[in-house]
Amino acid sequence: MRARDGETIERLSERVDNAWNANETAVENQLFVGEPLREGTLVKIVHPEPYLPQPSQPDVAPDADEGNAPVQGPRRAPRD
Image (cartoon, rainbow, N blue to C red; front, top):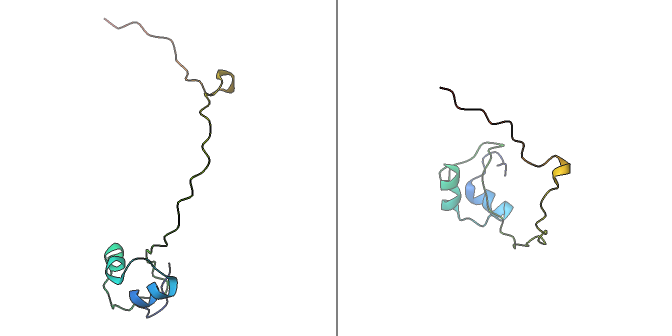
């Protein structure tokens, strides 16, 4: 999230509904609580959202005709 000029972590967190508290946000961003931020400063925040698993795909082995099979070269005899 980009900060607005002079905005503090607390104000930015309120504006974007950050799930981290001010101390957590400051630590994760190597900033100080209460310090005015510069315009455009990137700040890591957290937006929790529910986990929605994707439908599982069946495990299908690729066909050798599709070019996905491993290629092995000729074996060389050991050198003396």
